[in-house]
Length: 294
Image (cartoon, rainbow, N blue to C red; front, top):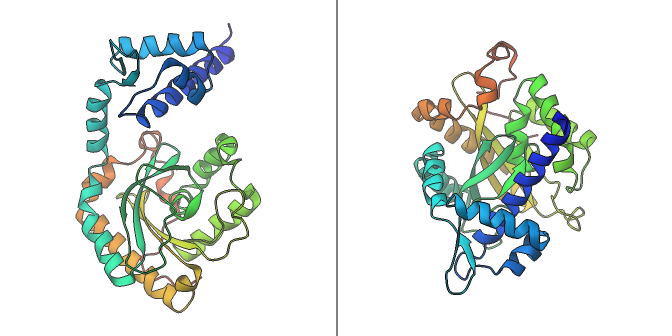
């Protein structure tokens, strides 16, 4: 087997293991029978049984001795604790989310970059009667998808943007806009210093015009975006002139987070970029002055 075939085989197995763990996580109370795992992970009996046995051998899955049902393994608890340390900023920014919600009455999110995805790790619901919940804690999106994904991708150096665009075109395929439209949105985000998005993410929602979002990047000390504040509301509430006040609030909170928690933000810088600092001088910087509505 050649190197390319080995890589494809590894990716296939990782994908299958991830599908099994996702299925077990969503059935954490009652567990799953082997047939349930086969159905949810779309695997045949031999493959599902083999992978479950391997997961159980390493503590990533458990099988009840009487019912035979499979559960998430205890080792994942220690791994989740490690992940919580990696994203220790989440509880620290909760006061900022609360202030944003109090002043806007809309829903605010805290989103971080994880590899080439954006992950929601904080949410504070607003009190406005019409609530727009487009993200939930734990939701992942490819970079460039939704407002926070735009904010995280747009302010990377050009070469890194091109790498993400090229390597993850398949992951973006299910979303109802093409790369030409995405590049226009990235260019607008760079010009404005913030991301604005009213393009809806899921098939069947493309023509809806009553939801919009704004996101402000949060950067480590060299200007690399590692997180974002994301606010979602009905479109009318994010039209000018109100949009300007929302942008100003998000920008102020983002700058305070950068000032207070810079050491943590620096630890969140992607490893792939730590090894190469040559891009720093040319990195497009989010505007530090008050952004005008776009």
